Image (tube, rainbow, N blue to C red):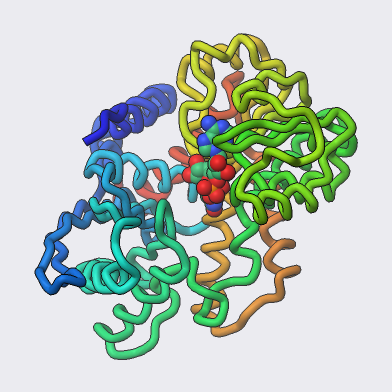
Length: 414
Ligand code: NAD
């Protein structure tokens, strides 16, 4: 098994640091330091060869304080129980920052999912869904896609759940195909939500996002949509990168053509502009840097070379605590992941609302409501940071944890 930083310890430390600042009671600290429920299953499935394999399946439900638990399903050989617990805690804070009525959860299968045949994938996912069925539900816990899972897996799980409960129940899971109860606008939601945050940030500070220069690290789902939507708002995307290389064009990259190129060739190399080593993108002098690739992209080793004036985290955890501290000291604002990439879970919430109402919205309605939520959340985090003289990550955590605590106090007498 590969070595990984202990994500759950980090999540607990982050929580406890803010809990101390908020002067929370020992009981609340103990309660929120662990998931409310942790399920570990044996998940059998029949391989193409006809033998039965048994996989470990996990679902951590960190909090039900503000509503049903919500969070994705990750199918990967490196998944661990501790990682799933950490991710479930982060989902609680993310849902609370944007103030959608959910707690946090996360699930996973410890399996080399990509190595399975399509038929094996379906049998395994359906078997996991039968294990999950008693502990999920539209009022209890609503899974969604994460690493290596997408709308196909979500459709299998919804169908299996329907078989168990005896009636269709699309609101049990989000990220479904549009023709099976999915929401319009879900694919672009993370990048779009980030762009709405950035738009609002510049309105609140210098006046407008128009003309700002942008570098996007990681030109995948989140990065492409963020670039496209920011460019539509009048920003100038000057650099993009992927796991192979980076491209810089001072005059501005034509984002639509760049996406077409990336989809066709699989790489950013060849987009008109100057080719750079991929990590050089991080060091460009730009108004906005969007890390949209993997965790730990900016660390103590490279942070002093970063010249961007604003960072908006599309990826989860792209900055180490050392990098975070450096930016705080040097007055660089970081719009943290729990806010900047919360557009995805927000549109998941819209999918659930539409499923429950049996009333479907146009893409314009989805995007309009998303914009309202992201702008309000940005304003609230900015205000909290100014009031308490803390960086935006701490402010977002203070706001989120405060909301969860208030729900616990008013309902359970903590
Ligand atoms: P993706 O796989 O579609 O895209 C990731 C991109 O990053 C790829 O183009 C890859 O080539 C590139 N990349 C990998 N290593 C790189 C490196 N060292 N330098 C530059 N580029 C590199 O993934 P995604 O869905 O866009 O997710 C990106 C990040 O955003 C992840 O951290 C994910 O957890 C987070 N996120 C995504 C969503 C969503 O809805 N897609 C929601 C919340 C958070």
